[in-house]
Length: 198
Image (cartoon, rainbow, N blue to C red; front, side):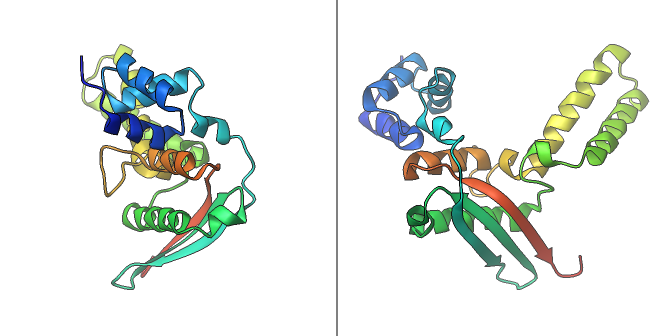
């Protein structure tokens, strides 16, 4: 059994917005594993970040980021619930981190639901044909295609991507942590990435 330290409890509390006792219990149930503890809280509907996700986001900022070489730029609209949060340094820092992520990875969409169905169909066809050409058994071709699409969405949609600064976390988890810390729902409304020659 892993030792449940005060630092671990504090980190979980900061990431989820849940009370100390619930955090300690979640960590104990998860043998000190932070991600498993977050999952435990979410499955029981305890995570306040999840509760906030349904609330309206009518305030926010449009943040611009220009890469140091002046060849890539990003405009992102990041929304929250109040003007008070939108003006905070923490909110602006989140917008900057998201804009840098977009500049570096050039995602196709915010989430997998927004990916053009035509692109998904094309990727499915490519994966299916490759599996067949590789001599895979017909009964596993569908699983291979499904796995390919899942990986494609993880790499090409902003929320599912690994963070460029921390590949053990996704962009979605970064936003969830910010929701818990700032106490408001936060949503990426839209973004545009510009690059020289494209």
